[in-house]
Length: 276
Image (cartoon, rainbow, N blue to C red; front, side, top):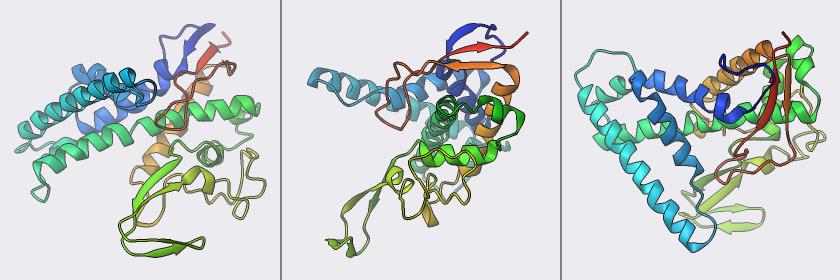
């Protein structure tokens, strides 16, 4: 962020929203600093390769996605093997020394952190800026007139990065007058639940200090997201730093392209000014 000149027009995702959480996860995993750029490339590819379009594009993206997954699995497999007898406190070493996990489970653990641990936070940060622009909130959040922690919760409700979760029924159940047999795939619409008028007053309105705000952007019960507090903290610090550094943050919302994997956009052009 320090290399962004005042008055510059940038893609805030490319310059900040994406590299910031990826760097944090990479540091927690204990990845070599020289590998951070590769880690960022993998993270983007794992979520940006759309499986929509014509047949040729779909097949091409399937092959690219499979190649990226092979590269990531091989990379983490080697690191786990190297650190199996280590004494570090990074997450790869801790996973490598856990005899209760198979080697494949340890690889899956690392891949899950790569994907779930950063791409949702990328969209949370960007979606927050999107909501601030739509509701003229930059100055209010900057000065503290609007609570950053509360407005982040409203962003999570109003523009949840994860709009749908998949579950498989373990026993027959009746829901909404319809029977669902055991073993059926259920797609739960988190985004719809977060705008349920039975739970929220004026759910289609963005209310920056909504209280109470019982959204389920991080799931619930035994499925509650383990990284929820990290995501909240990352978003809080990211927004604080952006608002402190730039007096003017002027997003261009005229031509936003939606993502296909999560609720967010592919790029988020902004003009940034320090005020100096």
